[in-house]
Length: 185
Image (tube, rainbow, N blue to C red; front, side, top):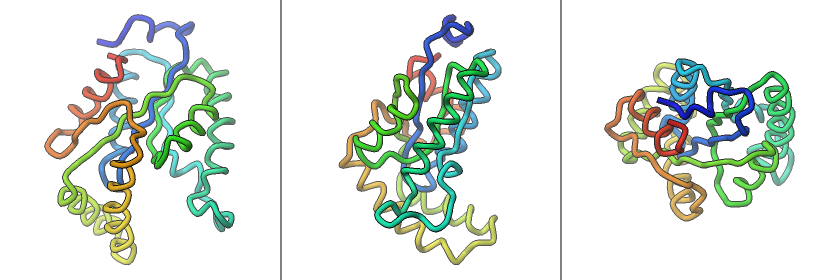
């Protein structure tokens, strides 16, 4: 059951970033959290941050187009707030405290960060299945390498407020654990 304050339009806006390495299930978890919020009648938006920075070419010195992502996040957040949204669920990567702070500033509201983890062999299996289903075997080696490297980066960065291990949890349980641990349920 979600907190009563989440059901009112006057609730203080809050955001939750679901982060983790490539293939850990960030977008799927964010969508599942959104489903639970919808079932509870909570005004919310789910945003896949990868979609907010897909432009080519990326500027020199900003290979993942973070600057564009933050500008788009700021604009979208304002539009969603004007439409009555009070809970923001984001799926994306924050590799440092500075990036986390950039997200918080762009959102203009409190931000919690949940890091999803999974055993790397499980992540590799998910990536193989995803690339096979997408008929994209050419980019699999890059994603496998990125998954390992990003896992190490996130271990060292300490950007998360809490962690949920997705290795053996079904998606609905992941979403429930994220909401519960964030204090939104």
